[in-house]
Amino acid sequence: MIQPQAGIIPEPGLFALFLILRVRQPRKNGSTVARLSAQLPALVKKAASMDARAKLVGTISFGAKFWDVISPRKRPAQLRPFKPLRSGSRTAPATGGDMR
Image 1 (spheres, rainbow, N blue to C red):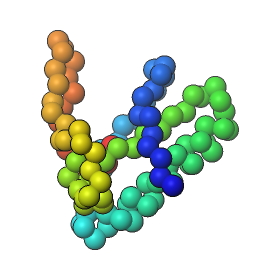
Image 2 (cartoon, rainbow, N blue to C red; image 1 turned 90 degrees about the vertical axis):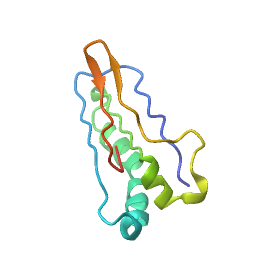
Image 3 (tube, one colour; image 1 turned 60 degrees about the vertical axis):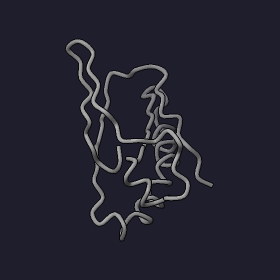
Image 4 (tube, rainbow, N blue to C red; image 1 turned 90 degrees about the horizontal axis):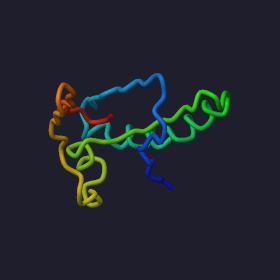
């Protein structure tokens, strides 16, 4: 059974890697991408068990448009495209993409 990931990192680490991915031909490849993405929690858990000091966490999210392709009747009520944010000199741009 697919379980949602917390998506909240309780303690910031020294390093982070963020990927923004686009799925080619979402209607054709969406179900395969979703099925493979469901394996991420187990892969992160296995990798994290190799060295607990690393505090490895992993989160995957789907953009609103891609969600409508992979699960059109089960879209979360609050899921919508990300709007850019700005606070002083810090910005979080609207990056688009299907997976983050």
